[in-house]
Structures are given as C-alpha cells and as structure tokens.
Length: 335
Image (cartoon, rainbow, N blue to C red):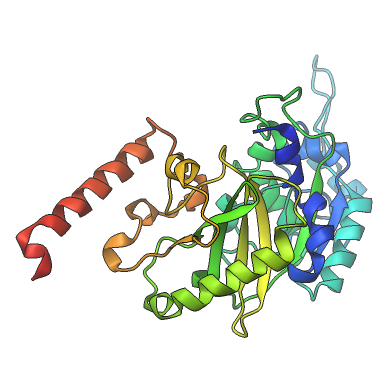
C-alpha cells in the first residue's frame, strides 16, 4: 500500500468529488492547538471552555470570587502554583456551531479517516449524535481509535516518510436517526473492478436481505460502474455505501485496500486471489443465524477489534468458525 492510496481515502479528498451521492458534510481544517489537545498535550482531560451559553457542557463563568478554583495560594515557604487553564478554541467552536445549525441541528463527527465509534457509549444517547462543540470534543478527546488517524495512519504504507498527515480535518456529517444498519455494505475494488461486496453489519441476521440480495447486487454494480469506477483515482480500495428505502445509494466512506480496513465476511487472502471476472461479483451476507460473527456479541464495534493474525480475537473467531462448521456437519444439525 502506498501513502498516496491512503491519502485518497481522507474525507476531505474524496467528499468534494462524491458530494452529490454522499451524506451532506461540512469539513473544517483543525488548528494544530486542537490536534495537540486531542493527543493529550494540553494536560489533564478538560473540556474546552465554551463561548456559548447553550453548550451541553457549560463551563462556569470565571470571576474573582472563585479565584481559588484556578489558583493555589502561596503557602509558607511554598512557591505560588497555578493550574493549567482550561483549553479554549473559540474560532473553531463558532464555525462548528454554524455548521451544526446548517446541517439541521445534529451531526456525527469524524477526522480524516475515522469516526470515534469507540466512545459512543460516553454520550447521553449512546450514539455519535452531537449537537454542540463540547459533545464533539468529548467524543474525539476520549477516543482511542482516533489515534489511528493522529499517529498511525501510514503504518501499513511501504513508502511512508511520516507517521501523520500534514493537516487534520474535522468532518461534520448530517445526522439521520433512522438509518437501517442492514442496508450498509462494504464494496471491494481491485484493479478498478468491483470483485466483492460484504454486509457491513455482521452482528445480526437480517432475513429480508435474502429476498433482496440479487436486486441489491445489481443496484451496487450499476452504482459502481456509473458513479465510482472512473472517478476515484486508486486501483485498489474499498468503499462503504448505504441504500435508502427508495433504492438510492449514498457513499459513506472510502478505505484503503488491506491494512487497517477489515474485510468483514471475506479474508484479505481470498480477496487477493479472486480471479478477474468481468461479470462476477462475490456478494456475501449473513444467510442464517449461525453465520453471525460471535465476536460481535460484545460492546466493541467490529472495526475496532484486533483480529490480526495471532491476536486473541483472531484465535477466538477461528475457534468459533471451526465449532460452527463442526456443528453443521454433525447428524443432529439437520434436526
């Protein structure tokens, strides 16, 4: 994988080209001071001081009567010690507030590549839905998964010269409360050909997908050939889509081929070995309850499980797959 291939999957790179077939998004370049805050360089975990009284996490007004809250008085023989002031990013906050309002009052945030899915539990709704700058800052600052973007974006690139991109961006995407998880799919492109599609949400068996499988495949093939194939510059990559009730397709994201991108119902080894076939696309969905990924019966999103060879989750999933195969071969399986 090349650095250029990774860079093309940054949302600020691909979104302008696919704006008409994606979720409405507003993108802001982040000041380095805010990036330093996300990395923990600003000291203790403090939410930024808000310039808005309507923020979900209001900060107290600092006045002279509360000076001791911010400063330790001199003691006998001790030097005066001041605590670090809470961080503040007024310009960024005002821009974010305007963006949230223009996107209907609620957004979900992500950086160049990743969203803070691992911190959804910390929000009051248990989702990535944000209505204020403080809510966004809380999710981003609490996220371990965003360290991929901040520090490890190029770890799988064989021509990397840096561990991080030159600039970071905050993408605010319009929040839709009623998206159906079974209608998200990951498409695998090799040599500019669509070779595989996987159900994105592999924690649940959705019987309705069995009836729609052929129609959904034709929809995504047509979308790829007409909207993606000759626009996205990479030869090998993946992209995630959502299919609406009226059968419109929206691009959710692009990801590099391999590396930190999960193959879901495939394995990278088999994707690499799929022969070029002008007419054939392998479309995989969970076709019965036994096909549900066991490792997903946890609170950990699948994209943040370490399933690399030799990891604990890798061995667990292998053992679970072997057990499912053994049960399916047993005489009792049909009864």
